[in-house]
Amino acid sequence: MSVFVLFALTVLPLIFTPGPDMLFILSQVMGKDAKAGMMATVGVCCGYLVHSILVALGIAAIIVSFPVLFETIRWLGIAYLLYLAFGLFKSVFSKNVLNIEKKTSANPIQKGFFTALLNPKGMLIYFAILPQFIDKSANTVSQGLILSFIFIGLIFVVYCGLSILFSKISQKTQIDERKQKWVDGTSGGLLALAASWLIIN
Image (cartoon, rainbow, N blue to C red; front, side, top):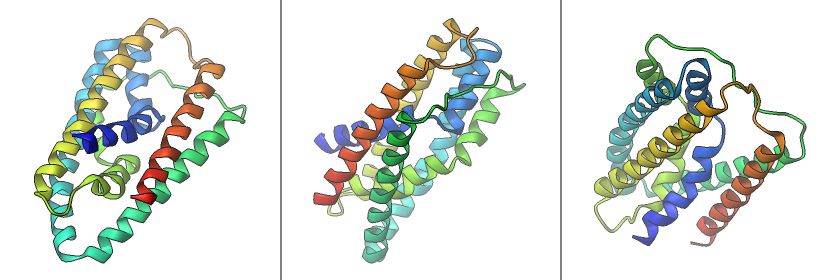
């Protein structure tokens, strides 16, 4: 259970980091309403569900057949976390502000599905980070699915919450710069801590 909690704490700042999924969902909210953002969120979750099934089965095969490859993936995941942490720390000292374009999609669920399916950040979470929380001595497929569902569940809760929040401030085209920097700095610190924990374990 502690491993699942740690996984949730590791991916949570990644979910809050702006990427294709979040920007698409927020664009739907600002272009229409919270319902459009929630529909887009459903599509995003469905896209990651495909990743869940494929990766859970694939990770099981890799762990059993290619332990060296699995160890390589583990270090790639650590490097990715540190890279994201560095980028977030860097943004704290930059003057860039996140801009969200107001636009709507005729089918937000379908567009959200393909946005998540082709999102490189999501792929890296599944292929480089999720495997590190799997106990190789137990059922790897079931563990992979549980971790995947935790990730998808957090995405649903966070993005639906953001949809409601941003629907109330949809007249604004920019996120408050000071608050954005606090979020970036906190997320970067959490990712750096997660990477450090993975290195020593």
